[in-house]
Length: 234
Image (cartoon, rainbow, N blue to C red; front, side, top):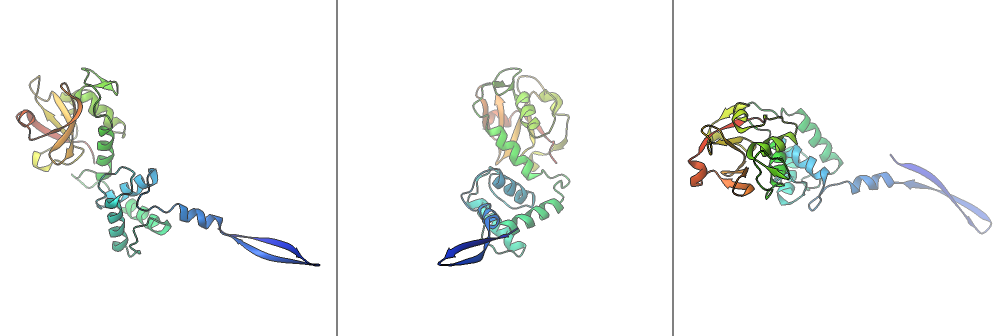
């Protein structure tokens, strides 16, 4: 919303008045535009909405990098907007409307935005030591770690790996998606170890030898002990 203010000056023996158009709010809108190099929660929200709509933004991490730029430009082209890669007022409005209309819980498919958030949270604790029975950043065991990470995003999991193996729906190894829980038979028969699949044949877990770390599903140790996966995200 703009406003007009009267401004008067004395010139010789006369008083001259003029109208000054105030455009301060328009300047604020321009300052709020998001472009490559921007960081913060507003960028995170844009990335999340693009991910929900199926656009690849790389990591949903609140950093407006080249992958996010490419995704914004593709979205703008697809929706008839100027593909300038800048998330201004119009692009933001169209993006919000599109994301809110879309059914983000496609049957049998993980919500990519939710999975990205969970994985980002899990990675923040890499290096935290393993503590049997641990369920806090001071130390985790495997199921304490998964329970803690998912709880950060409003998903309640049981406390132990064997009980976590009973929640959600079963997923075949060939259909694993980021955010799925993967289970292994280690020190006890049955599901005695659990981690979070992060894609590319890798999972993040709290293991006794390394603490919170990323491991490969294909490694000799884990491949021989893998027993199944469960999908708890929708």
